Image (cartoon, rainbow, N blue to C red):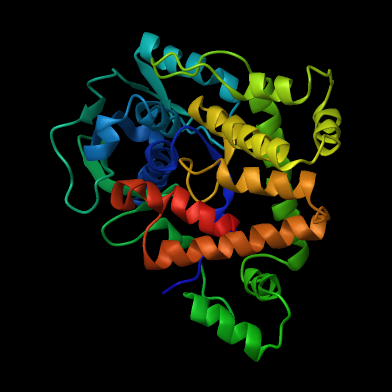
Amino acid sequence: MQSISVFEIIKVGIGPSSSHTMGPWNAAEMFLNHIKQEGKQLSEVKEIFVEFFGSLAKTGVGHGTDIAGMLGLSGEDFKIIDTTKIDEKIEQIKSSGQLILGGEQPVPFVYGYHLILNKEKSLDFHPNGMIFRAVFQDGTEISKDYYSVGGGFVATQDENSIENNCVRTLYPCHNAADIKKYVERLNLSRISDLIFINEESWRTRDETRAEALYIWQQIKECVYKGVNKEGILPGGLNVTRRAPSLNRKLLDDKQYNSLDEWFKMVVEVEASFNNINKWVSCFALAVNEENASFGRIITAPTNGASGVIPAVLMYAQCFTPHTSEDDIVRFLLVAGEVGTLFKKNATISAAMGGCQAEVGVSSAMAA
């Protein structure tokens, strides 16, 4: 069993679903790379097709699976794309009947013909299956099936993205007993000390700290956007965002002009149990509502559970003595490592394990 970095479990993502949005987006990118690995160039592609099956097809429109497929094939990166421009980019593809493959090759693209949501059929390997197919100018074709297995991870029937990107750590921790064994053997005082050592298989200790603090900054920015963005959530159910009104009520309509000013106000509120409980709910709602509207969020371990880790970490930073950068880093390292245990021994895919595979896992991570 290969090791998984904590930053594969807790990472920057985009809403509304890690399995149904991020997974297909990653799969599209993998298919473009696959074309090149097969000795072809994108400039040789005449037409491109993608068909989504099973769970991906049945909730495809609501979860933006179709959008993810189109943007992924267009060469867009969900980690850096301007999320406010997504609707505009998709409308351009649909209205023009053309997609710029990999950002370099114009190909015809008719929604409903080149992209199909097949609700009648599922692929055997996994409920979240999809098939990409490229037709080339010389008449040859390349086809590949992919499976979104939770948390943005993508597998094929013979390999998966985890195995491609991960290495064996110095002290492999594939279950809780491994963690206990190595902490005792190395005479470490904290689990996070062990994780720091293992993460050096991917990056230096300083880089690990920097990545954790970057994630913390992304969490704060996501919560801040969520508590300040009014309106109706997409999806056709006319659900009104609740985080902004709750935020105003808890701050007694006090005004602020920046994230830092807002954060300072939250820290200074009355730290009663009732007040804190409402703030934790506000933090989680803010993230969930950003996730529901194609916002940039932290996937931890999935988008469906993306409000849990941010809400608990925000609680710790606002209402407990554990407010140092070191506390933030160690929280995220341990939480991420707990998430890897579920990924390797059970599942974090709701299509496979239901809500417990998402919110249950993230609650264990946060605890």
